Image 1 (spheres, rainbow, N blue to C red):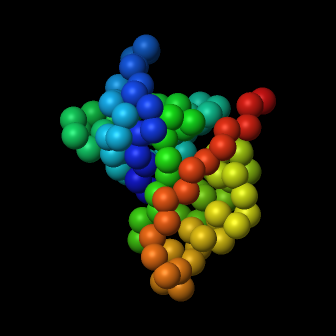
Image 2: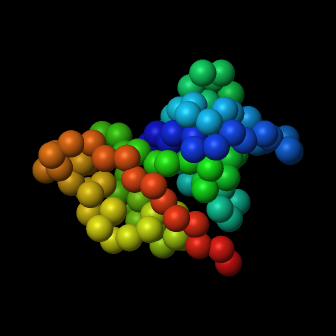
Amino acid sequence: MRAKALYACQAENAGEVSFAADQVLVNVRYSNEDGWLEGTVQATGRRGLFPAVYTELAPETGDDVALLRRLQADGLLSSAAQLEAFRGDLDGSGASSRDVTHSYKSS
């Protein structure tokens, strides 16, 4: 999965990544850290954790629907309709690729 940074992020701890607004993160995966994802900043090649709410997720061909369901369950995708939109893109039935802004559910 890919993500586009909505805001600049400054890493504060080892294992986190810094990026500027509008930068792209690739190979984004779910993290065991609540509210965080793991990915690689395309411009720098650095990989690490980043706050999910700083980004907008975008599906890519071959993305794991189970991952998308997990993100939805954790409140990082805001609706079942967005999950269906991802599914449409992944199985080829969607008209076009969709960028989906997520909402964060605090615990």
